[in-house]
Length: 361
Image (cartoon, rainbow, N blue to C red; front, side):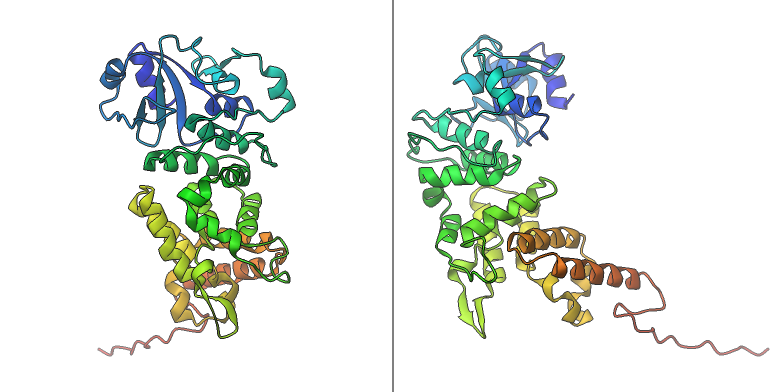
């Protein structure tokens, strides 16, 4: 049990996981970074429990605890209506028992797509996140109203929760339908206007290609997922040069990605790591042809395995096949192995060491 849960129990505050947190658990999905909890307490009681509690005024939370938990303070944590049938689905973390207030078990078992699409800011948030449970995004018969403005934390929570789902593309497609992406994340919306060569990108334009990369993820690491989402956002402003249609799009994309993440309040390490992955996401394709002095520092960087994973998802989503990825992995392993040899340079050549002269006494 997490420290948050222990602190709530120690304070004798009754609480339940609800909504997407409970449903992820029901489906045995990997828990998302942010937990949504209904707590039977006042804000004052909750503040006594957590000294660093914040009150962001979110439509889905009365209080927040860093990037770990969002709390709804209610009179009855088990019975109160929290915002619709799927939101009302709850789990008691202490004993693992689920509570189905609105009888949705049949839909859950059948994995029927819910339709929590009312005209509210809260509904937009929940519907986008629930969409990530299905490979094909649900079509809203009546799209939720866009809120007049969306706070930084609202957008960041939404982005993190979508990326942590099994099918992030479904959540982003839903937000694109509503107009949210165009209004709040125009860097991503512009990808829909990036036409790509059918020979190299039969999967479609820049947006389609980006969404396709998520289907090749092996895990749901946030840094890698952010890099997948943003790896081509430099293409809309890149120019055709020297036979390259998207000249320097990686460099442009890295700068634009850092600005995007800064606007959403991400920490410096995340921005630096995502920027690194995007800046060099084309490098593995040329690994075998680049001079050793240029790539040794990159090869030994702890982030290089993540860079190879980004390259794999990028290549596979472009239907190019695995050849270039496996070649890059082979070169990487060879160089890493050679670097560990004290008698060899990184390029495999012998090191010239001075011979010791014999001493005569």
